[in-house]
Image 1 (spheres, rainbow, N blue to C red):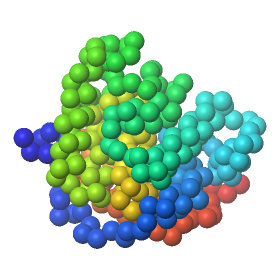
Image 2 (spheres, one colour):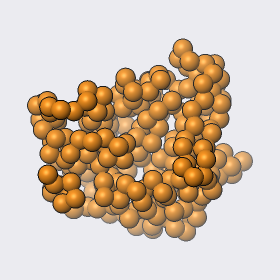
Image 3 (cartoon, one colour):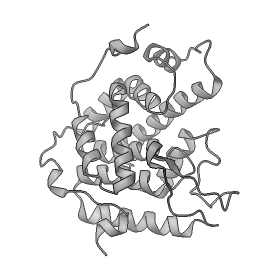
Image 4 (cartoon, rainbow, N blue to C red):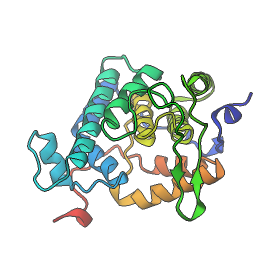
Length: 259
């Protein structure tokens, strides 16, 4: 079976960049740590979280922010906590593309937000509900149905990861894993967030800088994801993510979100 048929989508392999800047794992982890507030804020904006960049920095410094919903605060803290777990795994040489880590990251990201968290769909108490993805004017995308025990999702995950590790170089593997997790919807919620973290784990563990989708490009990202769900062609979103690469740290909040 081809990797495209196994994963459930395809992409133009010629669109993958041939060279990506490489650094030491220590260096990419340091950059990830220094840019954590920016990465968390970017990810929050993609989820529609109203926290501003200064508020994210304040919250990550251990100071609560008045006037914000507890659920919005928990989402920001979950993004930060899961990012720190990922960084620790990479920094200590313990990052692997595994179901255990994927589940652990999602369990932090979607805590008190998803129907269930920290399990694949069907492994917890909910055995039947199958979520879908809203595509606006294009309707909805439905993944594999939820079944008790999540045997099909688990099989698909392990076979997909094995194919990615066998056939794809690290950068291509990272991009494809993100789309794999986003498409197959292994969880009730938090799929794109958890899959982007795993994507960045693959990148950083191979000396490549983590990628964050800038808040200012959230609409572009969402439009390209809708195209991906509709067509199962990942080329456009992979090219987009590649364009988000930036070795130079961003220190300032974009002017659009200044008070």
